[in-house]
Image (cartoon, rainbow, N blue to C red):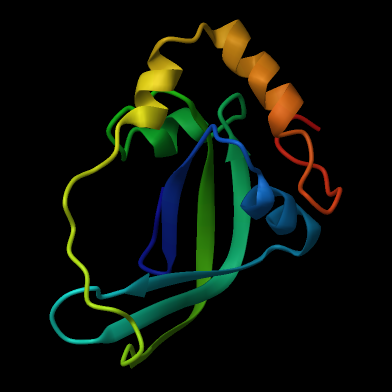
Length: 135
């Protein structure tokens, strides 16, 4: 599953596929977390990532770590090389209101075939022509 040097997140069906395409190209990824309230902190996780598609071996086991989300197309698993912090002095103060449910609601009203066709149309390549989720 995951060891202390590995993180993962669910990648949902959407209109782009940039992270997946660029991970497949060179494997490098940086995840950035910023505090929008409280102390102005930024944490970056640097590492090498891999894409585990919804229909690939290992997806179900890792997906069990997350609440089920309609439209999940892949998991992104990152083996960390470095973790760093920085000041977030230029990050604006803002507040969290609530999660948006538009994407989940969209996926709940689509059949598996409709989602597959959408991915083929919208997620087959990145904006710079790299292979995406369905290639």
